[in-house]
Amino acid sequence: MYTENGRIPAATARISGSKEYGTINGKADFYDTYGGTIVVAEVQGIPEGLGNGFLGFHIHQGGACTGNEKDAFADTGQHYNPQDKPHPEHAGDLPPLLNNKGTAWMVVYTDRFYPEDVIGKTVVIHSKPDDFRTQPSGDSGEKIACGVIKERTNR
Image (tube, rainbow, N blue to C red):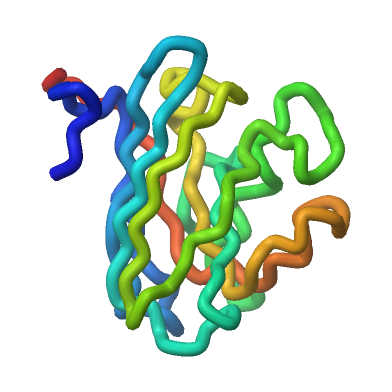
């Protein structure tokens, strides 16, 4: 497990793929740090060639990884955007994941939110890379994996 300065994360999300992408699994950890959050994502089981190797990765405002026949994760809602900014300035807009033979690992610092701001929200992986232009969500394709962000109580 990655630790930021020997600490365990303030929040975490267990990521699981949709029925169609059931091999995807992993986690995203959220570390409270001066002025923002360090996000660490570790994901395995990503199909080869998906999204030309890059996959959209966002925090969504909804609190459940449930949905319907058309969208397995419809209840995740839109990108987390408490300040009502255009894409890609949403608080939940994060860099894309890079698929390396089925595995992605990323660390990113953001000053757009603190871990406590996103507890109860969802982290979503999309089938295509975010183009950082198209409104409202970067044309990042289908939601293929999701995890609910929960507070870590044993810190």
